[in-house]
Amino acid sequence: MKAKHQRLVLLAVALVVLIGAALLAAWALRNQASYFYVPSDIVARPPEPDRAVRLGGMVEKGSLKTAADGVTVDFVVQDGKARVPVTFRGIVPSLFVEGSGVVAEGRLGANGTFVADNLLAKHDENYVPREMQDMTKEQAKQVVAETQ
Image (tube, rainbow, N blue to C red):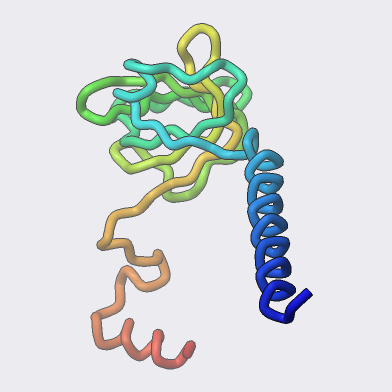
């Protein structure tokens, strides 16, 4: 076989191996993907009950209720078009408050309540750590420069 044909065969084999590896990886990860929904998506097209999804939106003001056990929190996530009740059992992030953004990771229950396994609190672009709230801009810049 000529050298030119050997290179073509080697290239074809390498291409088949790469495509096979990509398909194998995609097949292995098919159930690990976590889809992102907003409340209006969940209301319009609810995911299957066992599917892991992320629900993102704003915590509705006046909806945050802590159960008597102190670790179960019920609240409503809304996007201005729809509302989804959420229940979470665990320690909530310190930035989690009414009116703030949240991403809840979990599953949609049969009764329409989203059961969250994890909460990710979102802050706005004007977020300032508690330690730096009383500092002037110049003092904050100095602290940042010292930590670099």
